[in-house]
Image 1 (cartoon, rainbow, N blue to C red):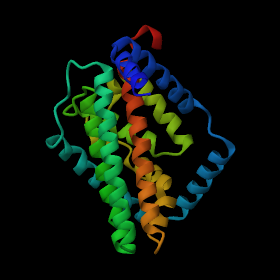
Image 2: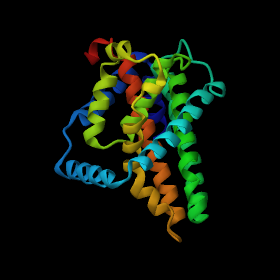
Image 3: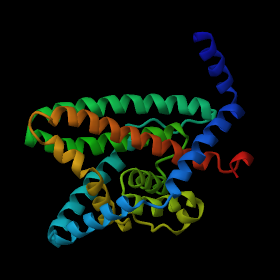
Amino acid sequence: MAVIAGIVFERMKDMNTYEVFAGNELRKWQFKMTKNPGILGRLSKKTQDKINSYIPEKVHTAITTVIKQMIRGVLFGAKYTTTKPLKDLSLFERELIVKEKIKFYRSTAAIEGGITGAGGFFLGLADFPLLITLKLKLLYEIASAYGFDLNDYKERIYLLHIFELAFSSRVHSKSVYQKIADWEHISETLPSDINQFDWRKFQQEYRDYIDLAKMAQLLPVIGAPVGIIANYSLIKKLGTTAMNAYRMRLLKSHEYNN
């Protein structure tokens, strides 16, 4: 078995072989992203929108401001603790690094979720900003591993769209996917100021997506296991989304992916 695994590993190290594999994985993900949401997905979205309509505007404004400032702080601060973009590596080598990063942050988030979930209501609330920080830091690490420079403001917007794509309803994520699929053209139309990003839509979709799991984490007894499972799953999904979002850009010009 070990010999077979070794042969597969050596074959994957060949750039063309691995890129064909990655391209196939990418197409499966793209198909999933472009599927229309099912009946349950549409009903869930309508229900959540209805609930949001009952929340006072000042509450929406306050939440938007908090999330905006929290994410901006991490988004602009993380670049000082993230390695520089990696150059001259094959896709195989890059994704070995990326998978290790995802594994590390997945485990870290699970531990953090378990600790805060076991700590009761108020400590459970602390999980929200901690988890956002871990998610954005992971995205910075992944972007750098794929060779993208996050000193470029447009790359940080792309990173936010990946975050949005991973943690939005199927109704909204389809429109976000269309943006990153056509990023060459979309990036040319971006506003010059990140403050013009649609923070209201961003925070609503993110909050709606994780509400059920994170509310359960605040409950006594079950808070710790829920925190572990929820955080593990959320980081795993973010990692998969980021890998395919960056694969889409790196493989776009290759003949087999046309």
